[in-house]
Picture 1: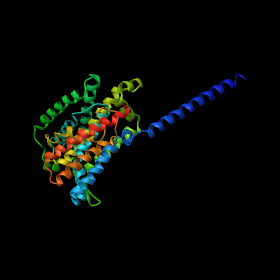
Picture 2: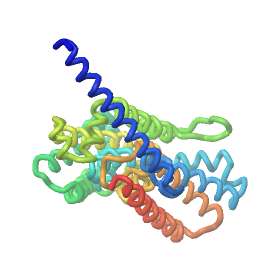
Picture 3: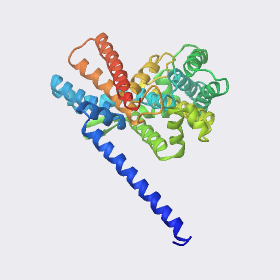
Picture 4: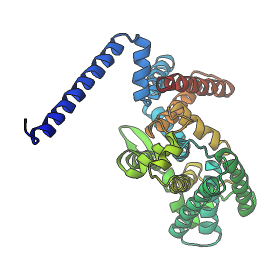
Length: 363
């Protein structure tokens, strides 16, 4: 045997070993799959497809309430009304999702949104600033508010929960100070800056009335889905949420990613501020006071893990729709508002329990 034959023989030997190892792994996997129970297979399927849980819940809810409430539930008016009602909370849930994917939480999303709506309204209506410029300033302000949250979390190493709890109070106080705790009336907005109510306008489609705010919500989720699933930035966001230390060792600038996530969440909140003016019809410093909790509810029900790094951005959209379907269906069958809240509370607990059960696959 010549010396030139030896490397090729070594290569063939290594290839043969790798093929044997792959075949062995494949047989082990097939054996394990054959010995899994139906429940274990379901658990593995849901672990790989976390969005399927809220999809199943939504379909079951629609069928159940359609059966109980009848044609009233499936009317074009009611279904479009559900979309309109969840549009603002859905936008807040999109912002919240970005932060939760990084294993954080943002308790200030609703405060940022209301503060930016007050800024837009005061500039355009009370101070005579052209409405497009007032809206642009609101976008810049929302991005800056989110970036401030991110800098506090990354530079001062503060827990996201405590940080955003503090900034929630700061933004809420600024909101009351700038507005003087007074609302800007719908008539004044119509007279000075009607474009602020753009996303409250409706258009007809298939016999139903949809608001431009609902379209904005869907477009925001679509854009975020693309960013998270088709860009390097999105892969880095998931990596940071899954294991921040491992992401740093892999060369990802985790602090920069976190600041960008919080800043983008602030921008989404500013978009929600513009949409909320149209939805409410006025600028109220007291509106959407429970928006933080409602956004977290949509995220949890939507299948995004509170531990970060797992879940689809489309899940919170489905989660918001589930909440809307439950509220609409229970209202149509005459259930008191108190028990509607009771039912949503159980939905949250069940969603977290399912998430914990699914996570056991990777334990």
